[in-house]
Amino acid sequence: MALRLVVFVGTGALLRAILGGQDSAEDRVNEYLTGTAEREFFASDAQFRATFPSFPERSTEEADVGGRKIEVTFYVSRVKEGEFGVAVFDIAPGETFDLNASANGSAAGVNGRVESSALTKVQGIEAVEFVVSASDSKFVKAVTLRAPTRVYQVIVVGPENPPEGYEKFKQSFQVAP
Image (cartoon, rainbow, N blue to C red; front, side):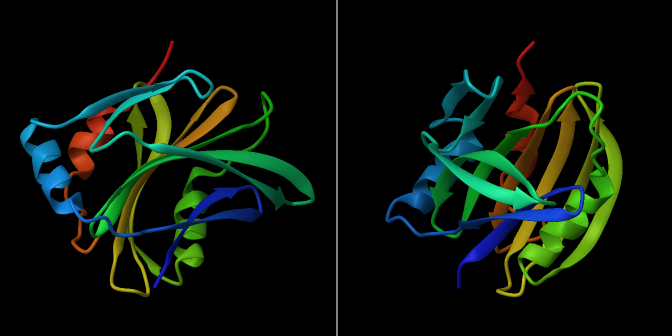
């Protein structure tokens, strides 16, 4: 069953299908967790850096959110039972964005429920960190943050709560100055 990731903006949800298997993915996750195989990546267009288990694939998707077209860019590293990813999109300065709604929108997008959610800060930026249990017995742990004109969602999906490697991946994520 494909898992759908939701990035919530205002009153709309943006969906992105994720989760696919690869033969050596389990080895890549183990190597990532032990620090023997990491792929530091800098997204010059989205102005962030993160260390992925494998070089991430970039894709874009246009979504209609509240009558407005938004382009979301995804950077995803697939592993055997999950994924490591960053979703990013631009918003206008001063435009409202409800961090708590992003957790609820993510749960709705995977036909799941929010298991936990807490407001926090990442690099001094207001954020919400949450865990969602999906209808296909997977867990999504993510943090959504809004920089002045950009929203980032750092996501790890897997069969455990929390998904293996989430803390390491979150710690590697940095918004570029």
